[in-house]
Amino acid sequence: MVSQTYKIVIGVSVGIAIGILIGCGALIVIRLYKKRQFRSREPSSPTLPIRANGINTSIDSSASISVSDANPSKQIMAKRNGQWNVHQNKDLFASLSGIPRYSYKDIQKATQNFTTVLGQGSFGPVYKATMPAGELVAVKVLASDSNQGEKEFQTEVLLLSRLHHRNLVNLVGYCIDKSQRMLIYEFMTNGNLASLLYSDGPRFLSWEQRLHIAYDVSHGIEYLHEGAIPPVIHRDLKSANILLDKSMRAKVADFGLSKEETFDGRKSGLKGTYGYMDPDYMSTNKFTKKSDIYSFGVILFELITAINPQQGLMDYINLAVIGEDGKGDWEEIVDKKLVGRSNAEEVRLLADLAYKCLHKIPRKRPSITDLTQAIARIRQHHFTKNDTLPPSVSDAPGVLRRIENQQVELSNMTSLRSNLSLKV
Image 1 (tube, rainbow, N blue to C red):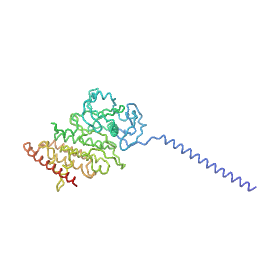
Image 2: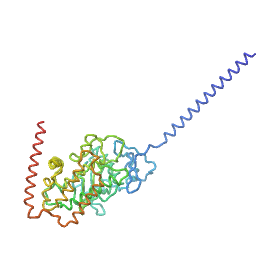
Image 3: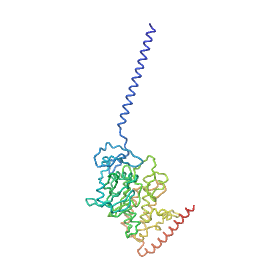
Image 4: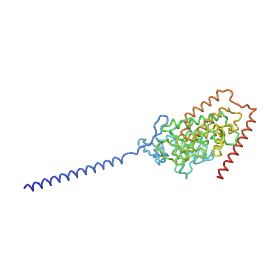
């Protein structure tokens, strides 16, 4: 009898234990199922926002191009390869950009069937156009087979819709019509800085104008580096991307390669223009604000010398600083058009600033805020000092001949060095 009772107790205990195990297993399965369903409804995490003028707005890689309404709270943000890529949800893109969208027919009519070519942009031709209200604009057309241009187009629309400054070019519209992609800018009457410096025409940039251009450009870069949150790195600063309006105000243009400053340690592919690219960036593939500073230093030397960076500007700079003290003899490379029309002290001060921007160690280059303040002091010196034109006009021909001889000598030294490099 005792044995039978013992067996019953054991059977009941085993049954209860099995029941508890089955119940626990069922609860675990139910919780995992509910958790999986919850995760499937969660949106992707957003990227860092870009804020302009204190307004919090985000650049979205999943945003796309349209004119219809969209709910910003449903925007799913994802950054890829440092670019703000845009999918083809047109409603969302329009809500992000806030920039007018035009049809292909609108632009075709405004450009008179694309007849007046202003130049060649980074990813297609640029045409002059007149909008219905009579406003002159420049229309940059994306080549239909340009994949890189598509990314630059998306970046520029979304970026310029959020960043606004008097020294940044103003984007007034865009066109998305089937395979057509176009950017519409305010018309800059005096073209780009490179054309004014290197054309053979009668136009001449005075020293005062060059100082003002340097000041304007520094302000534009300062806004990108210090005014935007997070900071924006231009990545393609060059004289061809500095545009001048009818009052000769300079504005930074072409933001197709621009990106937010990040500190994730990731490297980016080499992008930019030969002659303006930071050597440190070329060796490490890491682009920082100090890489923009290097490019700005090259532009400052262009203003001083009118020598193209792609035609040996750095060789002239390096030869001008050969000496025991390491200081530059900038008179040897100054633009001969400035002889007798500029202040030698101001030229020296600006050249010294430009040379600091080219320092091999990025962290030793000045910040854009320091540069803006220094250029402001040079301009103040220009406007307040009475004797702003040494040497005298009568001395100018002799000085001009001396500078021409020095530049010929520098050119010969550069050629000799190139030949020696080829032999090695």
